Amino acid sequence: QLQLVESGGGLVQPGGSLRLSCAASGSIFRFNYMAWYRQAPGKERELVAAITSGSDTNYADSVKGRFTISRDNAKNTVYLQMNSLKPEDTAVYYCNADGVGNYWGQGTQVTVSS
Image (cartoon, rainbow, N blue to C red; front, side, top):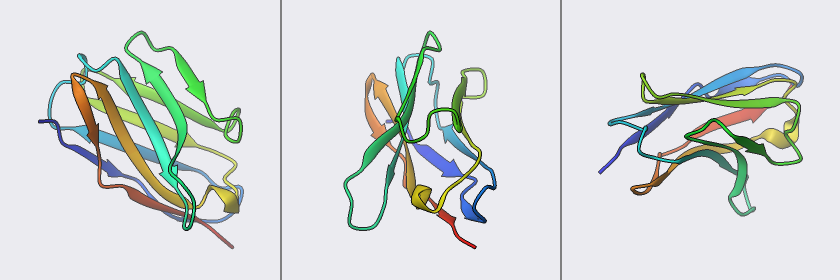
């Protein structure tokens, strides 16, 4: 079993930045696919960004150029740097690990509001 713990969420004004972290209880090296998803009230969970073990990345069109995903296998941590935040980025953000099993964190709330 792998436990994922997200942190770094909070309230930020439009145009601001946040950095989310996802700390894993074990090695993420064996997980080819690490990703961030988000779910806004009344909406389905959607993929925000993903990174492979080879550091290939892909992003939702809505966040391209504003968000950056990265992984540090030595620290068993995945990050999501979010810049130029918009009110529509408001959601609960979840970390996902897929490879040797599929695991989810409990989520962290991001609220973008003035």
